[in-house]
Length: 341
Image 1 (cartoon, rainbow, N blue to C red):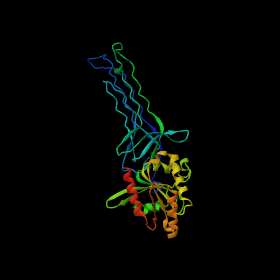
Image 2 (cartoon, helix red, strand yellow):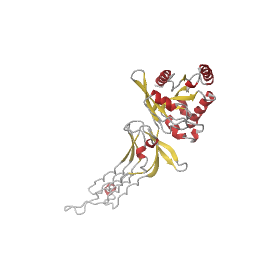
Image 3 (cartoon, rainbow, N blue to C red):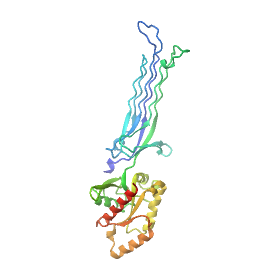
Image 4 (cartoon, helix red, strand yellow):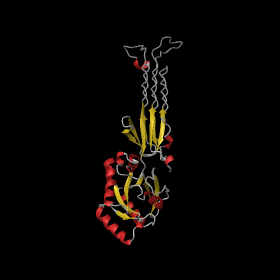
């Protein structure tokens, strides 16, 4: 999935349809030259609707659609006929898309309106205006010939934000160059870009990991976190947004880091500052790139990691290059996912 093909954020001006005006009409025919009011109601304007589509993985198709305009409702007609409803505009989006109000002060998404969590699920993003009542509606014992009808309600016109959070069983958490992309390329069929410089991964990559027989789970390699990411530094919120929909978080810390305990705490703090609920997810810690260590250094690393990292969280030592520890890692991840239901 290349950067040019993956879009997880769009800002769209939505204009729903105005309601049609009611009709001010009186029945007339050869036998009834002066009939009563029979003006029908105007129809509602078209809604702008967001619909989940499991075949979509990106918001790319909406990137250049800056304005979405729904049709106006039809006018009321004589003989008490209601006008035709304005045609709805349907925006199909991937599962995991969130709609937000646009905050002009911060120029980002504000209040969350809804989240698309199922295929075919629909929500109204911008509601069409109601149609006006025709003069027949206003007829009463004291008003036999109302010579007025209601105009239709105007539609709404405002900016909306659509954001995508990818869904995976396991989300990889770590600083740039922690070995996330390499791991995904080795244990799944995914082919993420891999290079020895920060932010090689600038879009999420998904891989299906085969596990013992016909079992499998989905792993997401997402952009590397940096200290201050919760404030928008680096790839900031663009990264952290995707973490929210992962079941298990796999913290990846390279064996050559200065202090594994401090690095883990920094990563944990970034998640906490962004959304404290992320700390409720299952966690596993992997010390990566262990092929770089000889036997004695490996013993020291294991001793240090077990001392500085929480004993309650599963810990595994791996090398994606040498493919060591990967079966143990998959066993642990599978066990943790089943704990989470």
